[in-house]
Picture (cartoon, rainbow, N blue to C red):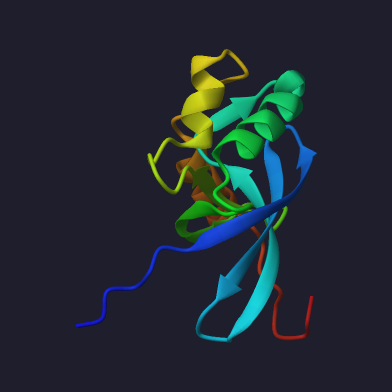
Length: 128
């Protein structure tokens, strides 16, 4: 049995207080993918951008962080729900934001995203 390596990501930029653009290596495609990561389980304050940047600069190991996703679930904006963690200590970015008052808990985040997906209208046979 092959145990997969944890995914790593490099932060490109903080696009919104709760959204980070990351680049990750996709082993199955032998390619790089750039995606927007919505920080799962938290609602970030507008002032969270700089603390996110500071955390990334402190915890990135040669520019790399561990990428943790919620089964690649995407919200209504197409952002993947997940978190970034320090590769050595496992400290999550969202935990840091909560501890420092830059975010508040959003325990129903994944459920709300699933509800939005279930309530979304699907195109009919004619295309719409």
